[in-house]
Image 1: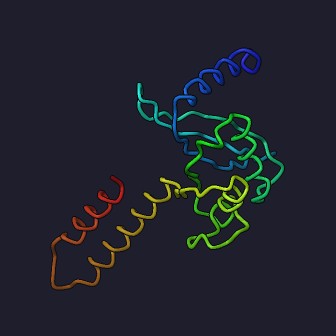
Image 2: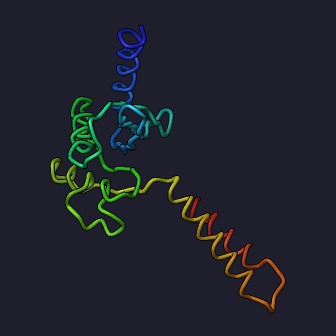
Length: 171
């Protein structure tokens, strides 16, 4: 019932929604479970009548986690759902496999392969959860350093300033 009734109806609703969208962002992550690897693909788009929408486009079982396998999976989902011409940004973990590292200089990664296959320039968006995690880690380390290396002051201005920077980065 779920596979043969609900899933096709839900996909019709998503396709109807996507038709009015000008641009689509794709979120991708690989989940490793004991017996397999699952690639989850979400899309985010703006619909004038209801604002920003996020939908699960697909969850596929993959045989591995190489950049070729993952980029093929994403490209297939884009083509199957006819959104390759609306695709403007990829959001994923900032790993070598996804983006080629912090400098994004490599060619053997999902980001580069998809751009090359589609002949477009994409916006690369690092995983928001990792961005927040790195901000908190930075603030924690800065606060620790400031509090332990500033023997002339007993106030918490370093904590407040770091917290304000973190809040501005998140917003």
